[in-house]
Figure 1 (cartoon, rainbow, N blue to C red):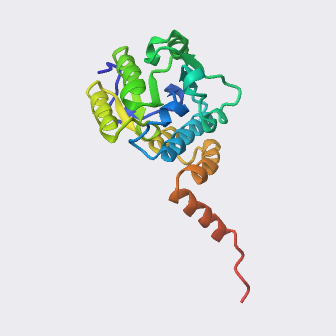
Figure 2: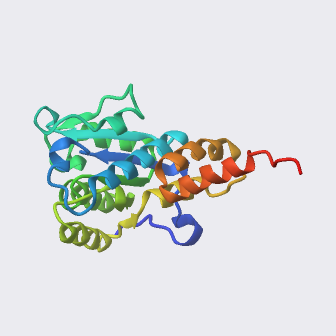
Figure 3: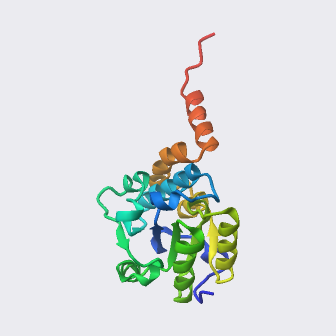
Length: 217
């Protein structure tokens, strides 16, 4: 278990201490994704990527053997159009210095990971990074595995190593923390409409009602 893990308020995510690593959201990995509906994983990881950009949280994009496994999905690449994903041969991202050097140089210790598959390309770097002193969070709905059992067992395994499972909306909410932070709150409105399902639909409806003139009696 990481020796820097905090309790109480200090255990919550902060944008200035966070760094995100998105791992292998590629066609080959999606082709045998059976733990989740693939569209839900795409929605979650895209929401996470957009939130990271809104809060200026450094985000590393990485693929594995992309010439065979396919390019990073368009939904993520479109959030960071100028960023070329780091293409690895290592299955374990944390054994690729092209990735770990960026994380180390950032000085940030709250490491947020999402990827495919949970039991392989997420668990390996998460467990290694936790042992190296990072406070690791795995965004479970932005991950997926070859089966529900594989995903669940991977999360249970990682928890044994002090890793915190979380979903993308919780990550975003902890970064925001206070709706009085109006600069980032304004950026979250379109993100919420596009990616939070019924909550976004209800919010858009609410705005329609508030902006519809009441007929004169």
